[in-house]
Length: 282
Image (cartoon, rainbow, N blue to C red; front, side):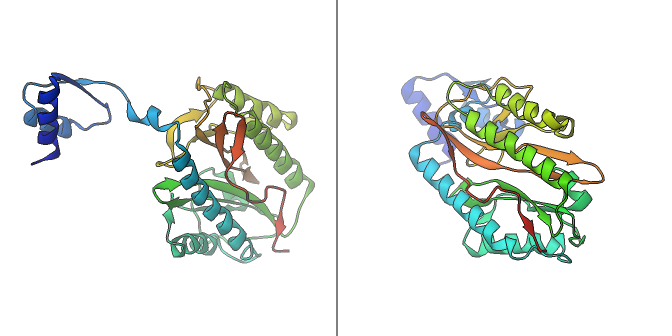
């Protein structure tokens, strides 16, 4: 007996004649359901499950902690490989190998971009080799026990300039302040605008072209978003990414991202990789 026919039996026992479905259901699937549940009226009910997933149980948060711990371990591991002359591809492959050999999967395709390529928020690793004075942005996550982490760190390769330090430290200031602002009762729009206001101390918010963060859980880009254009209530139990970035064409970009669990007492940072400005490979 198919699952839908079992459902029909339960609907008949309960006297249910009308049933809602999420709008993400395909037309073909819906038509199949209608055929197997004759006499039941199916009505669109919007997105029902994703908002429910926003509030994580203690067990879910613990799984997220494990996924975040693996991402942290991977960052520590890959730092040793960051040297002038190493390619973006090789770094990305090392990240993937580390995560997979721990029995996890990639939460998404690894981003490892350097120099001018780091000005592309979702750039793909290439054969470009690291050069002195590059920003190198690493964005990756681990999928473990059904839950995902999402970590971004940016480092400078070999040679640090005043411009590197000024941009990086301003992004870091914005990121830390945004993390601290994720408390129950806050509004995601205000948190996003806070980060932009800090970036504008150096006229940098014009280089920040995406939202501050997104929900995180069983899906990497889970329901909800932190954005200047979205009214988003912050509630205890939610888990968010916080990832401000500055992307300057022709020069490079900085993004710093942590995963944050909102507790009744305030934010709990689930990712613990070093965030101070690192100069590696010199």
